Length: 166
Image 1: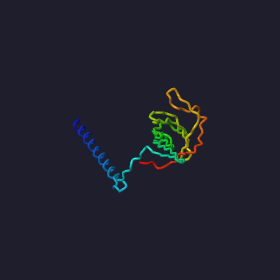
Image 2: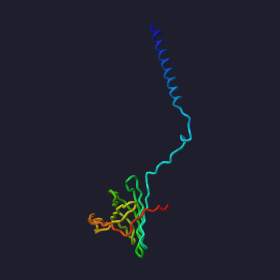
Image 3: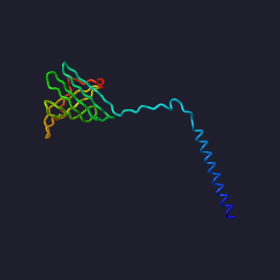
Image 4: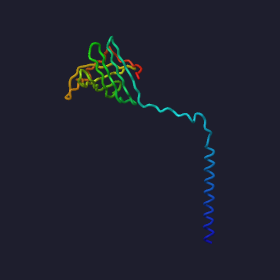
């Protein structure tokens, strides 16, 4: 009698397994749809970095700034000052946005020496205006603002958004 019960359990398990397999196959077939042209479109990945370029020209003086931004964070930038009949300087900009203000350190070569000075730019619409105010040297020899409250953003050389040169 024990053998009969064992055979019935095995038979019952095989029957249940067949029904589950059949049901799974039905679900698979019913979910399958015909591929269309839209299914084959591969979307181009979005570049998380944006490069923004700005330039200010006043007479024969030019200031250029490039900012590489990810989200709302400045990754790095470049800044160059080309003033008529003065030494040009070009260098890197690192810093951070605080609301509509970009504060950073500008490292550049001028007259054969590496210099670092603090810079601040106020965003006005799509443009930036550089801030100027009283400065001093810190213990590392970097030029920094004495007091942020004394910075004036009345520049005759606003940096206007321009297409970036590749």
